[in-house]
Amino acid sequence: MTRILPDLRRRDVNRDLNDPDRLHKRIMCLVPDGLGADPRARAGVLFRVEDTRAGVQILVQTRVEPMPARLPDGYGEIAVKRLDGLLSRLHRGCVVHYRIAANPSKRLGKHAGPDAGKIKALRGAAAEEWWTQRAARCGLSVMTVSSQSQQDVRTGSGIRHAVVRFDGIATVTDADLVRAAVLDGVGRGKSYGCGLLSLALAAA
Image 1 (cartoon, rainbow, N blue to C red):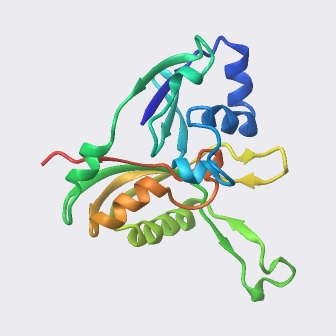
Image 2: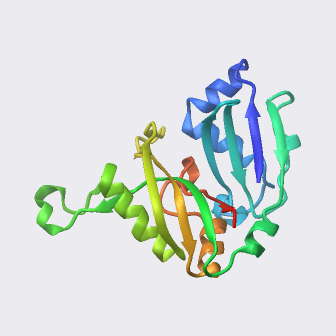
């Protein structure tokens, strides 16, 4: 996991944060070149942009050793830590705090008329229900959930990702499924800041 506190006084930082395609390319510079047709998936790149008390932070998770030296000099304050310890401590029945920014959506059925087959973004209670069901398939039984709509991501190709951040507490029902969800991400929009599942063990 690489934590970047970008220097918001820099023009390149602000251009990145305001352009999803530029930010994706910037994030991908943290992993080696030449990874084939789907380098994001092969390197396990997932990320999330957050506003914190300390300012904006970018969390980047990779399966390969990150190369922060490939970022421009002075781009921001950078710290790297491994997740092996956390992942190894997950077990059935343990309680975790979770956070994920996801793209909750569903494909409309044939009864939707002219909109049949289209993807509908979910908000509010519908989004929370989506997350509860998706979490169950990822080995988590959601105990509490709060959702907060984030700014939509609009790519240069015109694709829109409606982003919702979910926070709460869950119980691990299948540690292997949880580890897979952490490493592979959850849902759509992974190239644009969705799908990174962050966990912390709850105090006993």
